[in-house]
Length: 249
Image (cartoon, rainbow, N blue to C red):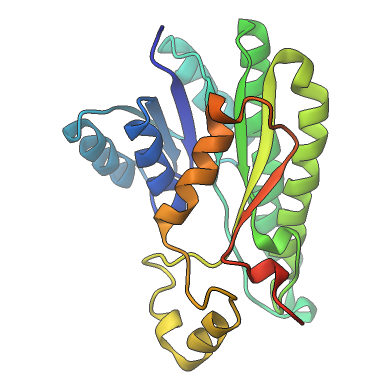
C-alpha cells in the first residue's frame, strides 16, 4: 500500500503546525501549505529529522489563483491526496458595530470561502482518482455558540459546520468523508500570555474541566476523523473543549 498523503493548510504555526506533525507521525506524507515559506521549511526539516516525509507549497486560501497553483503543484509531484486538514483561519476581535466590510471579508474569505474551495479542489481529485478520502474542516466551538466581539468569526465557523454537513451529503457517494473538528480554548504560543491575566484566568474557570486544552488533546479526534478509524463517520462535528459548550449560562 502506498504512503497516504495529507494536506494541512495553515501549517506554518499553531494548530496547523501541530496537526501536520501528528499526521507525519501517523505515517503520512504531509503537504505543508501556508503563506510563510520560511516557517514551512523549518517544519519540513523537523518532520524529516524525525523520520517523516513532507513537502511544502505556498498557499493563500483567499486567492483563487493561489489555490489553483497549489493543487497544480501537488498534481505535478504525483501526489494523490487521501486526507485534507482544512485548518487555515483568522480571527478578528472587535464589536459588531465597529466591523467594516474589509474586516468582515478578511475573516469570512479565509475561514469559510477558503475552506470551501480547498475542499472542492481536493474532492475533485479524490473523485477522479476513485479513491475517496477524508476532509477535516477545522471549525470552533464558536460555530455552535457565540461570544462577544467575535461576530464575523462565529458566523464563519458556524458556516463551516453547516457547509461540512452539506458536502458530506453530496460527496458520500464518492467515498469522501467530510467532518468538522471544533476546538475549544487551546493553549498556544499566541494566547498563553492572555490566559495568565485576570480575564484569561476567569475564562478558564468557566470551562467545566477548569483548564485549557493542550494541543495534544485534539489528536484523538483528529485521527478518528482523518483515518479509517472513523470510516463510518461523515457529516459530523466533534467538539473538543473540556465541556465548555455545555457549561451553564
